[in-house]
Length: 157
Image (cartoon, rainbow, N blue to C red):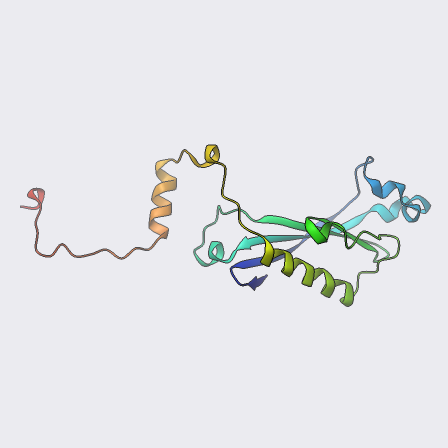
């Protein structure tokens, strides 16, 4: 996890190894055609969250997937993603995952997070809320209560 301004980048490595769907372009790569086992990869997902989501424990806040790093048994890699992450790291046959590659991916992800503007949720998605959600949201705001300055309600008398 890395905090960059008002963003938090989370690099999350999945514990399984995956292959690509048969319609994926990776299967057209001569490197993979030579040995289909080269298409089996570990995945590191790169997510962008608001720093406030972690600071205020807003557990339902969404993170946005910036990219996925695929690394195979030969340490070859490629990245699928948005913006520059989607086109800078595509040479699966020749790219080796090492410190220099990780630094470059890391810097690109940071730049993308800084340039990313958080979109508002669609109106239809947020136009309803239940009592539990609103109570949880209100209690998390930790607003200080004020004194009543000597006034009493009828119910208190």
